[in-house]
Image (cartoon, rainbow, N blue to C red; front, side):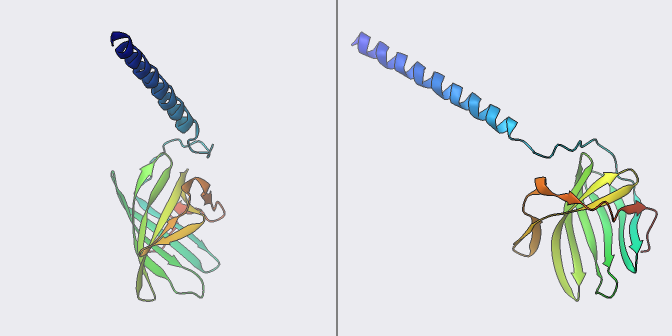
Length: 161
């Protein structure tokens, strides 16, 4: 009976050892599978103020009114010969990115859309990518695949609101 109990304890310790090895392997695997985006994300603070893009009759303005742990801004898109949309952006800064939700009104309809901006010098660069609808909002399908439109930088001080 003692030999049988010793064998059970030995088997239990072997099982625990295997479980620990599996957990360690999973941790290493998960850590190595992190973000595939190799672009450096140095922290750069956003300034309170008005950022904008104005060209060929298109006007985009984002007026940052609060920069604490939550960044709040008034945002307006006015495309040439199209209806404008106006609303509020609320998000958080992580590294050189600002990620949040834009709640806006266009043609009398209230909508929500996830937005990501990259802070670059004294500009904000809007991110774009594949989106999905969820309830009453639009979200990015995969934030690791976001592209940034450097041809339309929102420059600090360049806006009409």
